[in-house]
Amino acid sequence: MKGEKKNSIVGRQKYQSTLKRNRQISKINLVIIGSALVIYYAGYEEFASPLLWLGIILIIYTLGSNLMIRHKINQLK
Image (cartoon, rainbow, N blue to C red):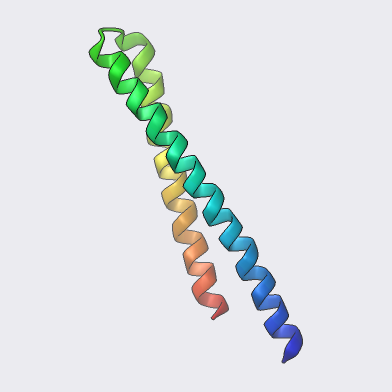
């Protein structure tokens, strides 16, 4: 019983560190999307389009990763 609890705690800590990293990625993503929108409205669509796609891909990655991690954390309970 004691070993199972320790494994559960270690697993939770690993997943929680990944959630923390995803929060940092989300903050960076806001900067990327914001700068892309500013560049787009400034008239430089050829530079803004790849940045917007990068922002969309990062959003999909972080959302998917967060959903999987939360599911794993709930399984550990």
